[in-house]
Amino acid sequence: MIDSHRIRHFRADRVWTSQGWQEDGVIGVDASGHVAPAEGPAERLGAWALPGMPNLHSHAFQRAMAGLAERRGRTDDSFWTWRETMYAFAAAIGPDELKAIAAQLYVEMLKAGYTQVCEFHYLHHRPDGGTYAQPEAMSLALIDAAREAGIALTLLPVLYMSGGFDGRALAPRQCRFGHDVQAYLRLLDNLRKQETGDLRVGMALHSLRAVPEHALRDVLAAELPRDMPIHIHIAEQIGEVQDCLATRGQRPVEWLYDHVDVDSRWCLVHATHLEDHEVAQIAHSGAVAGLCPTTEANLGDGLFPLGDYLDAHGSFGIGSDSHISISPVEELRWLEYGQRLATRHRNIATRREGQSVGEVLWRSALAGGTRASGLSIGELSEGRRADVIVLDDDAPQLAARGAASLMDSFLFAGNAPLVRDVMVGGQWVVRDFHHRDEAGIAARYRAVVEQLATS
Ligand code: NGQ
Ligand code: ZN
Image (cartoon, protein in one colour):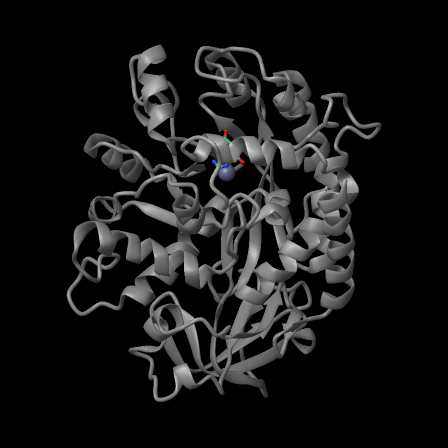
């Protein structure tokens, strides 16, 4: 039974629904932080309220190295040289560092309008590969950081077993990522005991490079909830597509679909390099393509074939991945701009005449991110978690914008932050552009990165 006295009501001149903007919308929020039937007097939030965005791909520790790999090296720089820099950086990160970095990252995510994050977490053990006294210490650091910041978390502990498609052993700097299947399933079981409405545990396979076929079969056969999200890095670099072809005679997406029953539980992160039949395979399977445009640009990955994928009715969501940038606005803008630059056309993300690109991008990323998160979020409808963002009424760039043009102006018309207030699960975590604990969290972050810079 819902106790109607404990339902708070909020109203905005326009509230974003799956059908578009609803005039004079009221959002009820019950005591458990879910959207409830709306009636009765309501507190006015502002002109524009919309569902917070799920961030479907994050490696939290990488936030602290953003901007430290932009200087040209001795050889042609690439994804693989960046990865060496990243591995060296990761070697100094233990649970305390991870917690401080992640808390700061999550504050920045909330302020940018993300209300849920999927953490693709593979920094499991000590830098020398030994286990921590508490084996899941690094996972717990992420859970603590998310709680402290007030963002909801889908924790995806990563299975990482080999250093390449040929099944070679992990390199020394990769040893801290590794588990055998039994130990990995134990980790999942232990973490699943902590699940709440704000914490979901899913499964992640680092990549086909890192998970041999027998292990893939074993983890997928394990007794786990039927609706558990499953994430994998799939085809980010041409080099890995070529290695997969050379060792397995198929491209990564082809191989995956040939060996596994891929369905809507799956999120294929960086499905960058696809042939037409692979575009169709992903789209028809209901899997979500996990797109991370700012990181994919930063790492020189390539461009996802968005137009063809949308023509095939594929689902996608967005992630900030390496956190070179933390903004759903920037991810969605660059998703569209990459396509414009490659095709020399405009308005690619919508396939219907008269439709707004901004609306399609936001709505699609909400739906795909929700699926990838494994939680009931992404819409301000009854029963969903109440994750709300309110835009700045006073922003000049939104002046004279009506329902027809608001989303396009929000996504394309500038760089001033427009997210003013943020609620996650019925709790205000950002008000008037400020996070409730931003000063303390930033101070701890600063101390950690200063110590990392001198060590
Ligand atoms: C990661 N990042 O796991 O952090 C990867 C790089 C790899 C991205 N793919 C490492 N963006 O793929 O081996
Ligand atoms: Zn990744």
